[in-house]
Length: 200
DNA sequence: CCCTGATTCGC
DNA sequence: GCGAATCAGG
Image 1 (cartoon, rainbow, N blue to C red):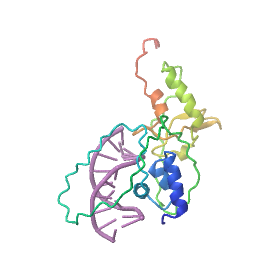
Image 2: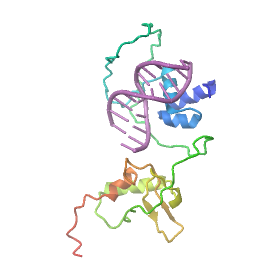
Image 3: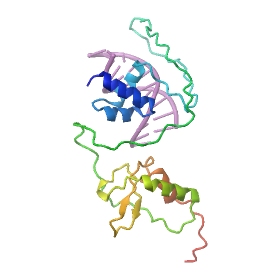
């Protein structure tokens, strides 16, 4: 794949929208996120410095000898690093989940054989009202996966009655190693506190 | 571990 | 110019 006008345009568009390099790469197809990042830099559009903390960019890298000739950095690309003035974080996470033509990757990740410790159904717990509210929010955006569709990184929080058709798993991206998404991690692992009430 | 972007450097 | 490898964070 080469960087045709269209592809570059899409790249610019998506990058501008705050999409991650990997997302862009997926969308484009035929390229890796590295390729996208590389292109982004070459195009000059780089820093999306909006909410990124001053990561301090000390250009002091001790390179162990550079046998190559001291080529002049002929890169008069003054990168219009103007203040994008974008206070709001652009992370709508609204990914268009469509079948992208991906001829490669035959060995997709294997499906989880279940048998994993499934979470307790949200009972009458004393969880942060916030957390619960968040869960209700999230459930509306849940991927509603079936048991078979769960993978190593899909939230395995069950919703609904297993004995009904109205049963599915959250399916949103899990948090780190946890089996649930952020919202569900919040209610899955209780601080274990309110205990005395239940006199057994 | 997964993911992000940044940089380097052989091609 | 390109992008895998590698680096540096989160």
